[in-house]
Structure formats: structure tokens, C-alpha cells
Length: 112
Length: 115
Image 1 (cartoon, each protein chain N blue to C red):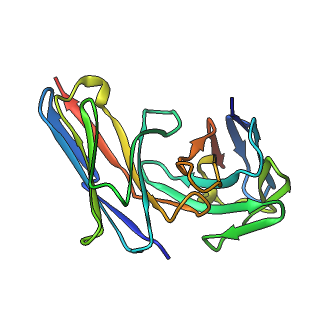
Image 2: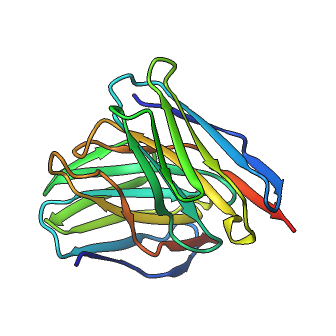
């Protein structure tokens, strides 16, 4: 079955710097790759997603890149702010009718 | 608009007691439904998912079970809880129709402590 690996498990960056979180997936049939942000004690919420027919997608300070050949995708956060501190999860699925497998999460801390 | 309800928010149960967590979705029909568990400081582990009434796929062998008695109702159960069952349980749903995003929408979660 699908396996999603996520690195690093923890990341600390200076406010204003960029943060990058990387994920790899095992099932080449996966075609949907969402990223979720989970603040302390709250539910995960989607922040950005990408489909396999797209190589890059950007939404303000957040961008995601996908390399289908290498089966990896990354989350890039630029100009980090204190409110970016949270746990971030990548995920992969084979479409809207299949299960969604999550990575192990990255705890991002923004240093003032 | 669609909403998901999950209850209770917190639960403390003794070892060996039964468990029943309920999740309902409003505003959509025939959703995909999921149960995830998040241990302290860990990732989201998929426990069960369902694509329709009575259709349950189990991802991890354990003493938990799931049922979907109605289209928009998903129940997580155990006959006898173990200490290792403690964690944050999240119910989620996604749109099954081709062309939609497949994004998962999560309930508020249930923090279960087995003592």
C-alpha cells in the first residue's frame, strides 16, 4: 500500500526566513497531494494541494512542488511569521474515491 | 454547507471498558469517511475508511472496529480498551465524486485517555 515519508520531524527557523518540508510517496498511482496545518489542540486544515498534472503551485507565501519521476513533493513557506508555527502534514491519495495517507508530520517553530 | 460533528471532545476510560465514538456529516451525500488516530507528538495513522454504508476497510490490525450504519454516520468502537489506545482520534470526510478535490475535512477530534 501507499507509504508517505516526511522530513524533517522538527524544524526551527528564524522569523522572516524560509522553511522547506519534504515528502516522498511510494505508490506511483497517487495523483493528489494535499498539505495540512495543525495548530496545537486543533484539527488539521488544508493549506494547499497539488495534483499530478501540475509541477508547482503557489498561494501567497506558500508553495508546493511535485516531482512525479522521483515521487517526492515539498512545501515551501517564505517570509515565515510566528503564526506559521504548527505541525504540518503532507498526504497522498489516488483520487477522490481512495484513502488518504498522511506523513508523520513536521513541527515547525518560528524563532522571533 | 457541509459540516462534520464528532463527539465527545474528551473521554477518560478505564482499561477493559468499551468505547464508542460517533461522527456524523451534514450537507453531503455518500461521503468517504475516515478514522485517524494521532498519538502524542506523532502523525496521523489511518485506522478505517469507508466508501459506503456497510463498507469498511481496516488499515491496522487492532482491537478497534468501525461501522457505518447510515450514509453519513461513522462509529469507532472497542469492546475492551487497552492503555495503548490512548490518543487523539479524528474523524474526517472527503468528496468521492471524480473531479472534486479529494480534500479531507476533519472533525474536532476526541482526546481519549485510557487509565
